[in-house]
Amino acid sequence: MAFMIAQRAFIKLYLITMVEQHRGYGYEMLEAIKQEFKDYGYVPPQSEVYRALHELVQQGVFYRTKKLKGNDPKVDFQEIVLYHFTDDGAEKAELYKKQVKTDLDRCLGMLHKAEEDNYGTKGR
Image (cartoon, rainbow, N blue to C red):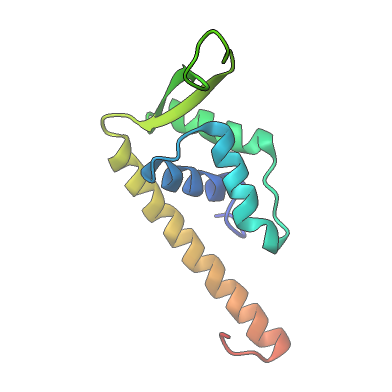
């Protein structure tokens, strides 16, 4: 068992949530995670986000589609990758989220205990 939650598990959790919210464009998800956690001083490495996406595809949770960015193929040559749930991907994602929740609860308990023991604060 890891000491705290693994970075990639944390990233996968957020990627799953974004696909649930129909925000499945790879670069958009990377930027959203950066924005969400910048106040905490956390900037996920781009390589970790794309590795997590790749693993979710390999695990059969997501599949990828590609499309041209914009509406005019004569002008818009940039191809973007969109991520979607596979047929049973939503169920696999829910199971994964339950596993991560257990890890998060354990980590939060450890952090609250460390805060209380070392700084005399009781679960702010």
